[in-house]
Image (tube, rainbow, N blue to C red; front, side, top):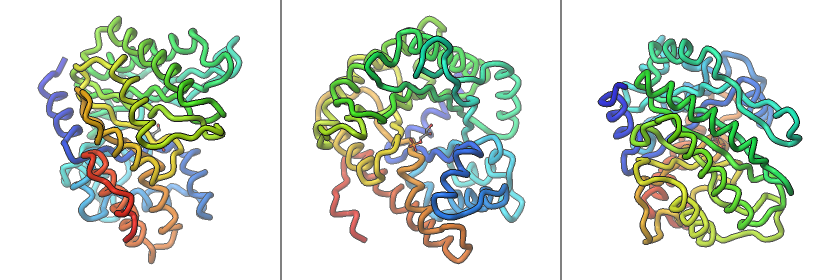
Length: 339
Ligand code: 13P
């Protein structure tokens, strides 16, 4: 295990005022995001949009790492610089999404499992050569009356642990992402109990697969009521429930918890991260962000495919990145949203 290489990556990724930009939408997901703002998805459009994100001046003050999709890892800037090098030159660590998406779990209606272990060693070795220093694998869990099943938790936890062990063998820091989805009308208490069960199962599997917790990062959901729940919660209530859940399940050896935004509005994702960091109780890990939609949505909207709007898109991204950097330190206030 290449401990010193991973140690350096962890120190850089968990820098105290920074978080991670998730720009690893698969081609299908990116097509949906672009369609939402009326833009056709071509390889060149995806490349130039990603270039506009990665060249936003000052992004490196707020962002320590960027997660890329396979297609983007091998793309270059207009001046011919490969994106991983372009990011490294700014002190931003390039990472790569390595799972192959989800599939229905046979005999467990409503449950899914994540694909991608076959050939992972070879793929990772190639990504590493292209400059990736960390990786991401996402497992998803839907909350329902009898969901997720124990079997779905176990099979996905095992996949996450196998992936993490393979990454560490190659000196790549694994981001372990078990996402309990917000979809549904469940209460915050139900989300807390499912998230607790999922995380306990994941850390049991990581232990069984001898994953070194010091050289991994966790990318979980916050503990939230379902999107359609009549009982919504304040940032304070979300912070209390989230911290209680993580203190019960995430060992102190894990250096950082980088939350996903999961469909929260960009302002809610910032306010909730701030409330989590502002609380005084014991928090043995760095608590930061690894947001996709909550960082990019306003940028996509401002840009909507026009070269002339590139600067406006970059400003929108920088604003969200700066506010999330403050939230990561517990220093954000809603009044800062007004420009
Ligand atoms: P969101 O922040 O949009 O949930 O995306 C994060 C991510 O990387 C999901 O895998």
